View 1 (cartoon, one colour):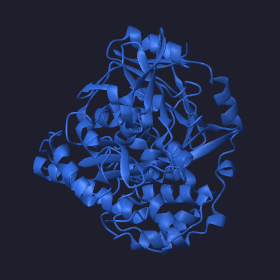
View 2 (cartoon, helix red, strand yellow):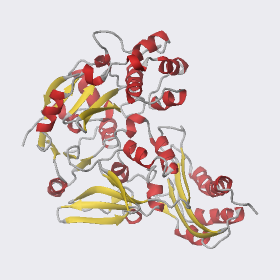
View 3 (cartoon, helix red, strand yellow):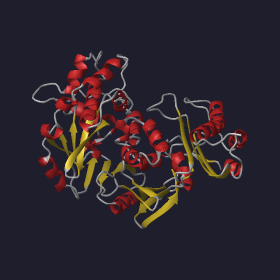
View 4 (cartoon, helix red, strand yellow):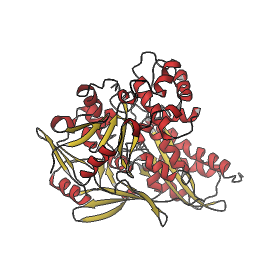
Length: 478
């Protein structure tokens, strides 16, 4: 079993082992590669100053996506190609994104500029139409304290996408693809001092490794784990990265069930459900920046066990199942029964999440998802909610509600659901249901909001739901 990872940086091969593989990509680039254009500011994926392009094999090509390098660790990047801002020039000439930033005076202090340039380059190479909205969307994860953004948005609108160098011409992929294919089914065991990181190639091996190492930490997208490592100096003794496990990135729908693999990213899921579940698509857009969604996974959001995880209320009201793979086989757990307490999950020592099975909502369902936070985008929630109703005429045939941020775990509200069942679709029904809901929750006060504020949100969200769905579905109000 090999003891190194294979990585390319701006077209140059790197075989890394030892201490390097336990470093964040941002720190490695700055300290070992001298690629200091990659800036480290927040160290938790918020500001985008460290954005790089990460390319991985896909359908015989290398597909590149913008990702925050501060919350990607080297052990996640076996068989990947990293392009930094220094690697975006062609024959020493600025690329169109860089040129536009200069001509539109898109930089002041310049600290955030490399991240903007990389994100703008990714947009130009994506083939998306360049509009004010597409530029703003692509740059949601890049923060600037100086410019007020107008000059940066202008630069994005004016960059000459047709003149953008093709990344495959900058870095011909043939040699990299050949090297990556030779290691496709080759697991790795990485070590430094008393730390271990395993890169298994199948779920059975991953489960066996986890079973033999109590406290082993599973790394899928790493957007939560890596923040803990950066901000709390957390150094897990044993890591198991799923980056090489085949099949875990698959998303498919069969017989009304959406199956989401444990390595499938939030952006993959967002693209898959676009048009069919608009409410979830909207929440995922608010969930995090493109850089976060291209790395973070639905399985990771579930495993993190946060009571304010943005995807959980939806999964709760859809009665999603979590498939757990273990050394003795697999089993499925309804997500409503997965959490036993704060960060306590019904997952055995030898088990890990392999996929999530989500019943697709019926088009006739009344489904609304809510996220309240201090910032609209890229912020931790204060309160979350999912409300799903089925109607029989103007009568509520069934109701499913889940609230986040009101208890140590995301809560289903069975008493409120029972109260709503068989009631008429009237404002008074929801106002009275709000009092029932308040009796089922116990929010605390913290830096994101007081218990009184969360209670008010929990109460008012039901009236908001009523007004929104009666307006959108043209349900006659009495």
